[in-house]
Length: 266
Image (cartoon, rainbow, N blue to C red; front, side, top):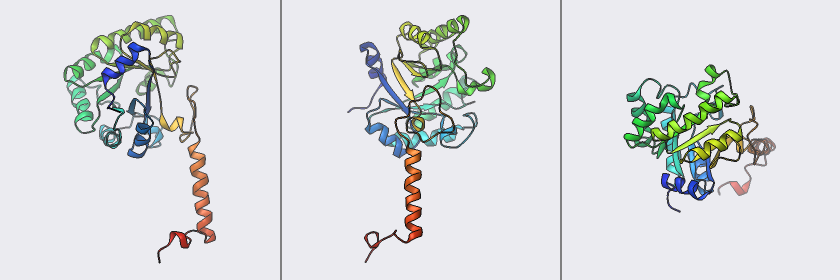
């Protein structure tokens, strides 16, 4: 299967075919996601929570994001790799934003970047796009803004907020974004947003009316269980399976069962 491109995603929206996206942060899991036929792999700053054990995504650095994106890019033969721009990597001005975004492509091997925000970052989206850096915008619940918005809350519930999100979707599209990630927004509003833009919408906690869906891989696989958002569907419980396997190994070693002659050299 050839590498997924932006044109493939636009074609899927036009033809009504759903787009699939998952996060990944290292070579082994990215390889599994790629082999499963997922369209896009997002190297999310969510690694701060599910890989680094942090309370939120804010401390994640550019160098950490480039490192993890490089690992994922090595594994993704077919999936489109998108690097997530961390907090303060694009907030201080257009020049810094374009320079940091370019690192994802030049050093990380990504095909595109994602950044949070609507109208407030439209100038950066435009500048990146003009520099041949494809951009996925991200509206609704934006985790890098948790201190301003007061935590992880559903967005767009009032008429005023709904109108703002509709407007921001069109603004980022006009700025050049090739896709729009929508997080924690009521599904009826998401349906209106999806119909109002020509670019694909990717939902997380945004209901079934998006053009595609994304989940954090560690949530889907049941590896991260510090908290489980309402919108997550766990398809496995790998944490429990891994713990059971490790406990069996521990027991075998303590009882002298492992290594046996079979696992030894003569």
